[in-house]
Image 1 (cartoon, rainbow, N blue to C red):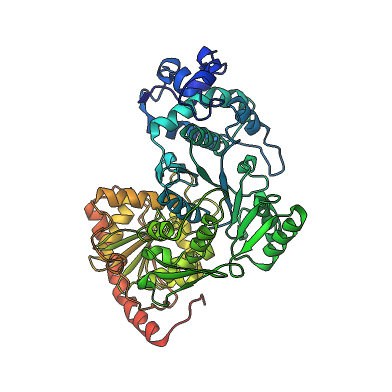
Image 2: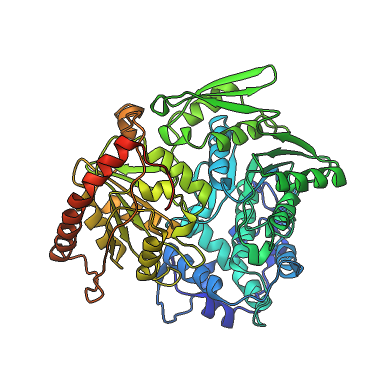
Length: 567
């Protein structure tokens, strides 16, 4: 399907939606699982109603989605945390209130929402349930945010539903800062798709908060709260207690909630919420827990509840996400009217890989990608990387606005033999020269630091620096993860399917050591980053020269057991 309209074209020419008799006759259509809301298929031919030529010309569905939602995301919004979401309620009402009648698991938290959601999705799908998931952010394309039957929704289907919503979105956004934002529009589109698909269960990942989040419109039969960290303080802060109070809003009266490991101040807020509304809580570490094999390469884990034990064999990356896995298993066992047995859980996890989460993208050199940008997530990444008995280890990093290298674990910087700083997203990415200076100021990395604005050039150069026997890890930004996955595909890299888990992960059981502080920054402000081989080779040679100078210190550090920390 090809679309010849964009946000501005739809806004200007479809502010008033034309009447349609088929919309009135929706209740008489056979084969519709929710006749109250299923109107698109019979009454709206987007290619006829929206044949509007504009500056973008005729676009395929995926490209049109990019333009439309990126326009919405760039539009200014004056909404504050306590403002009512009247535009969202209006948009839902105009499209049949699709939030009603769905069986929902709602997941909130500072970190781990997405991985928990995808693991739970895999278990439910393995058990034969028709499952949907609404997750964020996306890595490469907006369609990743809406998942059906274990994969992204087709672009044609997503674009058609967005086109249906576009007139009402335009009308509601006539005043600057008003109307539904891009997250709300995506949520409504997802709910419409879920209802029309007739799904059995839907997993919905909350946005920044929970109590005042857009997903609060859902009546979830089960809730999960993963973690609470001091994040988005300007919106749901300023203190950790404020963040915890907002996220505790995922609890619902007389419903069960699965709670992860929380700091004491957050646990107190959750308990106060429970007392106020009468929710039932199950705590990780008290009501259920996990035990991992001491050898990460084994992939062995055991899940425990009172009078219940489940041994599991995991894909290597999931070993490091044991807490999130435990939350997913506990949730799978408690969704109202949904049964998932032990075999379903075990089969779902044995080969499950999560995009952008400790993801292995190829070999020679080993290529990894992880969107870590907080202390907790970077600690997990550092632990995993320390199990790789390969050298050199090259970090490729980029950060979006509001994030920086000081949020990453000192141990992660200490594991690097070389660091390449780039900019994965021109609109929202930070200046890599500024980032390089901040890395220097941390005094946590002995590795030489190179600045390369173009991410493809940065990845290509990092691969050459690592050599066939080394490792490249891209982290710090989900945008960089997306660029890394695209680059891996272009190079023909794919995850091996015919090797054992140990071979696939390249794990040895040898734990690495931190590096001494120091390092130099190489900058090439006059080179446009065109990906030329001469440019790649020049800075790779420069880094290799300095790498040989610091390698002696690396070896001494390992023999002395240098601490993980900054001087």
